[in-house]
Image (cartoon, rainbow, N blue to C red; front, side, top):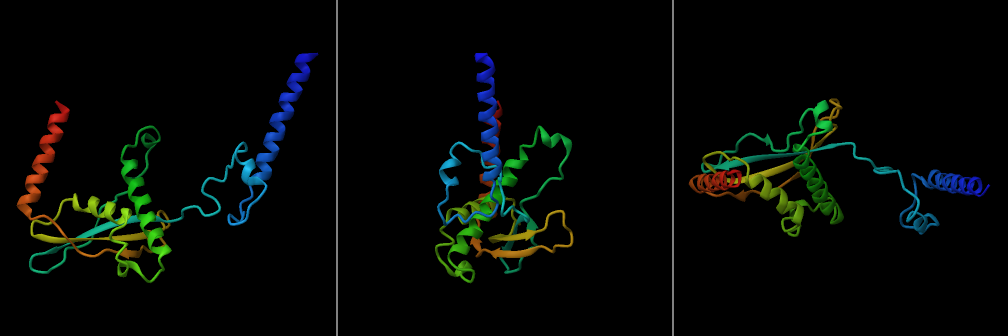
Amino acid sequence: MASRKARGALYALFATWFGLTVAGQKLYRDQSKPSFWDKLYLIVTDWRFFAPNPGIHDHHLLMRDKLSDGTLTEWREVSHVEERTLLHAVWHPHRRAEKTVFDTSAELLRFIGQRGPNNGNADPTVQLSVPYLTLLAHVATRPHHPDAVQTQFLIAVSGGYDEEDEPTMVFLSEFHAVAPNHERSHQEAGADTAVERRTR
């Protein structure tokens, strides 16, 4: 008898918890206004995840070099999104790099948006922000043209698999100096040596 009551109480607890979880999934809550649910979410799961503003665009990071004679190379994409396969469901280490570029690009755009849509590079704090410097460091370590003296990166957004949505440029960086070719070769050789030492 006691076990039946305990089982009934347990069922009632889970049913109540489930009911509160369903009722609490209010997709259009006003985050600026306090609500009864704010404290309740400490024990009730919020299953909305990315809602009500899920990501609908892919971010693309591109770069180009300025050569010693002033000419510019063609844009080339740094962040390449691999075509998904079944293997990626269990092993996809490249996803870490994709996610880092995506999150850093989104953070830079958010940083710029907080300072006004028309500021861009006109705001000197943009080039000193963590996301800008992170993307610049990533671009600086990519292979450059042998005669490159400066480099520049670009953030574009697209609809991903939606081919009707044309890619749009959303941010263009300033040009930044790169190391001379012989110094880059020396740095790359040093990096290769370090990798060899780690694999021994």
